[in-house]
Image (tube, rainbow, N blue to C red; front, side, top):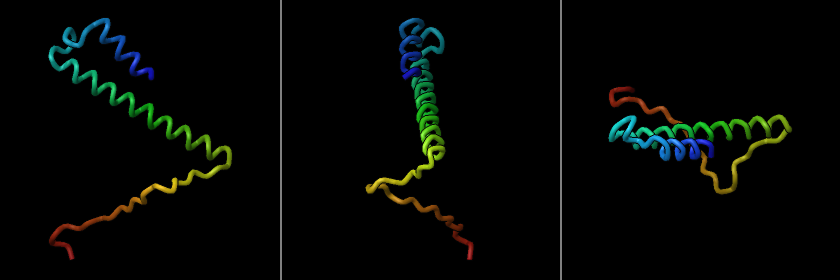
Length: 78
């Protein structure tokens, strides 16, 4: 939410072409994605800690898909 407000404020005041030329829009979109992902991950971490402090357990929903990690060797490995 705050990143959207900051982005719109910057666009209304400065204009992307004045600072970074033609690449200004790309820079702004990348900044918005970066800050949005930080907000998402902070929210997830906050939710996890909050649930654990209250003694709860986070369980996946019925439609969740289990992910398995495998290490795949190279072609010459035996």
